[in-house]
View 1 (cartoon, rainbow, N blue to C red):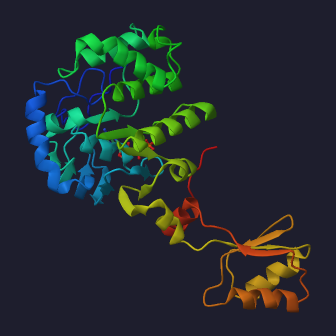
View 2: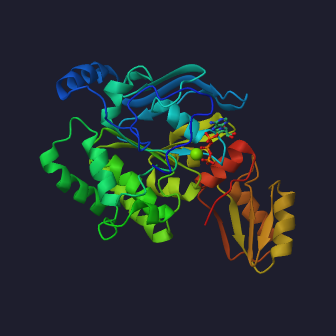
View 3: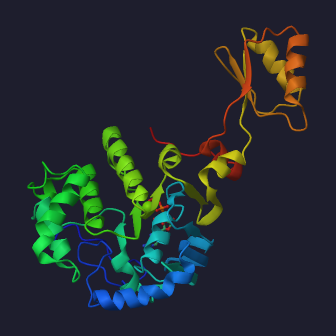
Length: 356
Ligand SMILES: Nc1ncnc2c1ncn2[C@@H]1O[C@H](COP(=O)(O)OP(=O)(O)OP(=O)(O)O)[C@@H](O)[C@H]1O
Ligand SMILES: [Mg+2]
């Protein structure tokens, strides 16, 4: 029983079916028939899988962890929940899963209010929440068997097959017989993901799913997420890795200090930011001077490249002409596509801890 999740600091106990492994999942009495009836009511909200309104969490110590969050996660999206450490991602996810009560505001998951409808909603949601807790004395495979056995809707006759398939999907087949306490962080993370994948789900909520994985493991998990999404599962994942979000997500929300900075389609988020002007030239000093004269900000010289923010209200053709008129020998002149990182920096005015 080691490695059980830390007790809730503000004392709000789990409001829904959360099993002892700390993973939100089906453990209660709601049968399949009742489920179908209840979730049928969510039909009118079929396009939005997660919707929060002014969702707020202030922990008992006074920490305002999530501040008036309005989140809209479209069905079928791979939705990246992006923010630096401490920006409120896990707190939001715990509220969405009914693990903690919001201080104010509302959250709807699969069209139903959380935490009130947790019993009806959670069987349709696979979740991996920060640091999956496992029974260390059991093998990875036996942890999954135990987890699956806690699901009243799971057919015991197909349990072993289900577990084997889940282990295979996360690349743990060979390590399935090893005790979970001997797992590396990345292996534990994979096992937590396997638990979320035991049943087909309408929604997967993954808190930093690639945390602790090596680059190859990260690629595998990203490929798996794309595969799940192509099967129609909505995937909501948190990350503090911008490039990860760019690679795998169709939509994203950006958090900073508990507040939502922006959300939308990833392509639109980056498109809202102007890419940097890039001049390739042997005459970098002169080029930098001319660009500044032309009103370009943040001029940076690296080797034979000068990059800068595009000057506002200036036609780029005129900027190029000014360089040439000043005798700058221009080898290349163009605008780099803005990345999500550019967008983040432009939106928050801050840098972002990008790992790797
Ligand atoms: N149980 C708790 N009691 C009091 N404060 C907490 C608790 N959990 C989190 N916090 C605080 O709330 C804020 C948001 O934390 P949260 O864990 O939601 O951030 P996060 O975005 O998931 O960060 P990370 O990227 O490090 O996982 C932080 O300032 C954190 O210290
Ligand atoms: Mg977190």
